[in-house]
Length: 278
Image (cartoon, rainbow, N blue to C red):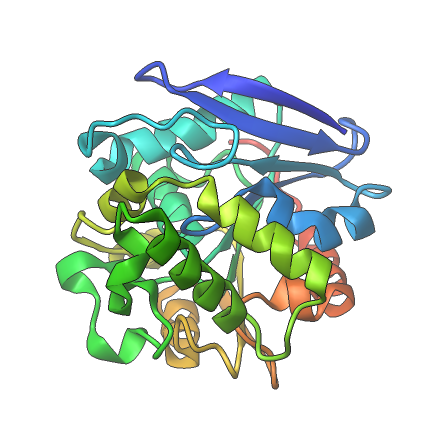
């Protein structure tokens, strides 16, 4: 394991951590809102012996820089440049991009700006399909972060309590005590101004996913209370080569609740979608 930083187009340092042999097929893990690379631990532990796994911290999260300017989080081009910067710095060759929750927005930004010629495929896990004015009511579950104002407050005790509630709502079954504590701590590394800015843009991901030519796998827990399962189905249906795989009885973080199954499905998908750079 090694942690490094890539420099994005606006000078923001983007942290990323690598696991496994760089000569093997590559997978880039892109976490969700207020998370960080540590959330993927059950997945990289299962995949690092067979793949080159890279987990990045989104701008404003974890070890990445946290710009104060709201515009640093609302522009599609910057998210695309962040992903490209990590791909270049880690020397990823035709990676599979895996996005959890808000990570779907980041992947869509990459596709919108860069296209899909340099990636092998896309996997969404509990992925969002729209943010801001484009998000429709049926997309948001009862635990959607947009419904809890305390998640965005500068009042640290209130934000901590809300963050604990949010992490608890991310899984249908309770996480073990250590993992739960680590997730809450990791979430608190994302400051209030970043949390607020992440949802200020108005973006519909469906047109971008509809233009994507590479294969896609959409995994969604049927008990997801953050992003509704119907959103996952709609995401897959918007794609030319999308496959929807529901995880019965699983919540918003399928790779945490069903890591063996998720790793198996991701591995099979990665093997099946080998592509040659165009």
